[in-house]
Image (cartoon, rainbow, N blue to C red; front, side, top):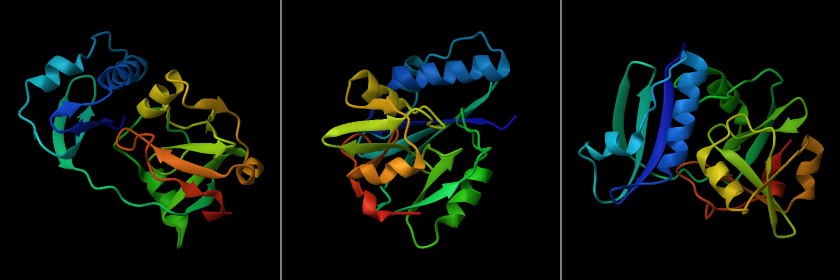
Amino acid sequence: MSLLLETIKLLDGNFLNLSRHEQRMNRALKTLCGAEDHVELEPMLNTMARPEQGLYKCRIVYDDVSREIEFVPYTYRPVQSLRVVEHDRINYEFKYTNRKLLDQLFALRKDCDDILIVKRGYVTDSSYANVAFRRKNRWVTPWSALLKGTQRQKLIEQNILQEEDIRLEDIRSFDACKLINAMLEFDAPEIDVSNIVF
């Protein structure tokens, strides 16, 4: 099994959205490794020396027996265009260090900044983030997301996002989309749907 990965936003010494990251780690360990031990992130991370100023990606590589933690300075990579890439067998329910297939699909972006993955006719995610679409001031996210991200879950629980089946042909019915993940919150820049290339 490929090692698992968890990415947590660290802003000015504070870890964000820890409970949802902890839930996802424990679900992955139980499902994939049969582990019954409960990971508790807060006490584990609070014992570590960490940057107290600035924005960092706290990267945890783990399995049922090991944990490797590093802090990487984070710089946002602007995304203004997406290319639709179809793959009907892709599966990424858990976050792994092995991103070989995602990287292969990302290489198909040509002159676009990122990709929008479509599986069996349904919109899923970009290469590294969940997607949200706006129609008449209402924001929705695909039911068919490959990876149910922690930021996505937070926004659903806060009623900022609703889940909806979004087919490939539905894309043009929206005004804009944005990419969201642990590092990109809902104030992430919008992408005009006219910049989604089929």
